[in-house]
Image (tube, rainbow, N blue to C red; front, side):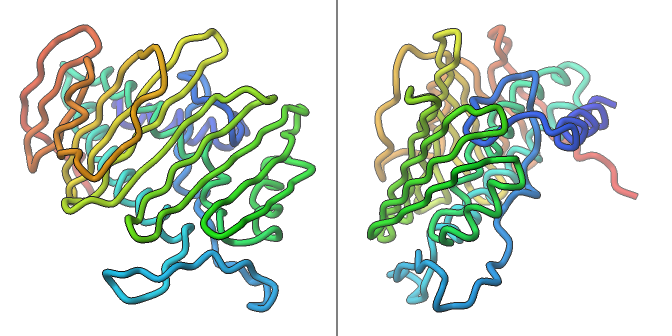
Length: 273
């Protein structure tokens, strides 16, 4: 039942138009943004921005947008399974609400999904949310976009993509004040990532995650400042340093809830028809 309620909440918020790209997620305007990933750009090739880089491991061109989409696919698959497992266990059903913030992050960071795709694609994507005055630039592996939302709030995003490491970091500002820091990087086991949100009330929230195939770990913290930038040395367990964390390993879910309760139970997927 909780799973159905969560799904209804997320869909309802989406179609009600709640939330805005660039806005820090809150528990009151969370929404799944899987539908907000970039679609194919129909702009003629000679008018498109070339955000592609040579992938040294695969020997093929990969754009920053493709890299970010691959990361989101892996992250959202993990968070979806984790939320499913938590909500299907009567003792942890409401702990699934802790995952909403990192889900809403996809909407807050929607402009990042359009890095490397050019001015036309950026304007079209942000225009869906009523953004105006969209200005997009790129130089080498650096990207910037600025715009105003339908309420006149100004947002500015800057990002840098390291193609060799398949790693992206970016910051966002709201009315000139930094409110989001985000990064991810490919690892030997999958991905690591972190989201740092500066709330309007002065508090700061940190989400850290590690994705290992279909498994992984998500950690949540209230912190006093921006975290140290990720390196290539994080382990798959590094989010467990957070006071609240949840880990999925095969059919097992372990973790520590927001009130300090330790978890260890079998993951029961929602039955499909």
